Length: 109
Length: 137
Image 1 (cartoon, rainbow over the protein chains, first blue to last red):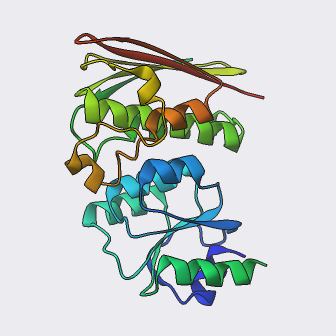
Image 2 (tube, rainbow over the protein chains, first blue to last red):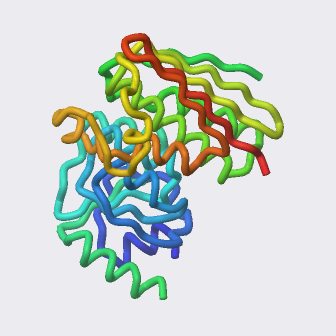
């Protein structure tokens, strides 16, 4: 599944578009940034409510496929600018991390 | 090749600049993605620690074909109990920092997890120097 497929399957809004052809190989839910950096895998779709500039840095350094902001969580202006600069894909949904992760799991299996 | 970076204190928007720069350099030099990821995460955790606890500091990175060495030095308060600091979940970060998503007590444990060696030299009231290496398998 690519990020583009994820957007279609989970009906996500695109806030910033990086590489939409990148493969999504798994998912990770969490809001504590170091926790996410320690546990998320490269290629994961990361479900979180954390839309600040540090979350964008985590996306870049942990090399996740995209960040999905859950339950309409806000994306800071600074974070949006940084994400565009770094080619990070940030998506958004009204649904919870749990609901989105369950759907992703079904689509991946 | 050697690289030097300054980390400014109390500026969370700029934290990650040094690790981002190293990541870009390693990518350009053709290092394997997993090596780059380990270096980037370990260095970002180190940067964040310097911003939270030590009012910044400086980082020296030595890139060899088979070994990447990062030395992070600060003139902060030092670490009173390294064993405690190494425990997952132990944090002395203030509430303001936790609201940004940091302070999970995973910084040093993550550094240990993603590096091949980690040495912490710390003196109370003087500062801390962390030397860590990632081997290129």
